[in-house]
Amino acid sequence: MIGLDMFIACFAVGVGGTGWLIQGEMFPTAVRGQAASIGATVDWLANYALIEAFPAWQRSIGLGWVLVCFAVLCVVAVLFVNRYLPETKGLSVEEISEQFESQAAGQRQAREARPKAPRRYGAPATGH
Image 1 (cartoon, helix red, strand yellow):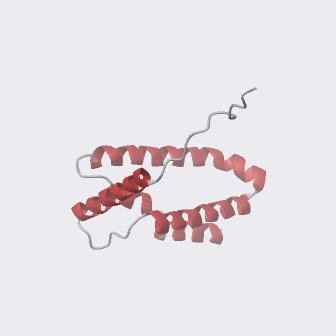
Image 2 (cartoon, rainbow, N blue to C red; image 1 turned 90 degrees about the horizontal axis):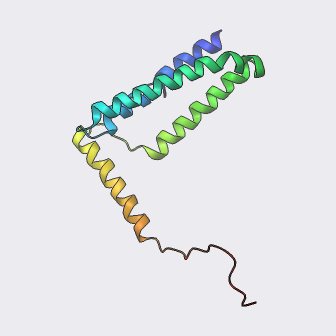
Image 3 (cartoon, rainbow, N blue to C red; image 1 turned 120 degrees about the vertical axis):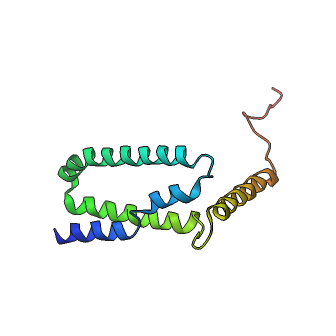
């Protein structure tokens, strides 16, 4: 029980609020309300699915391994946040939006600048 309490406390302090924080910063002001409501809906549907799956998961692999899986998911979440999300501390909402837009534009330009390899749709003709 102490381990479960520690997991809940560490999750809440760590990556637990990340999804809600991202929703408030990531979307442009014009669509923020709609995008945040879609994000919240997906979050609650995922919570419901997890609650429904938990008893079967616990019966099949045991509580200890379920919590190990949760810990692995938390590590993956931390790695994802560190790799793909920029630091936004001290920036205004407009500056954050500009940062995301310039990052997206840079990725778009990089994709367009890559040389395109010819597509091969079958074996070359042999002339037989």
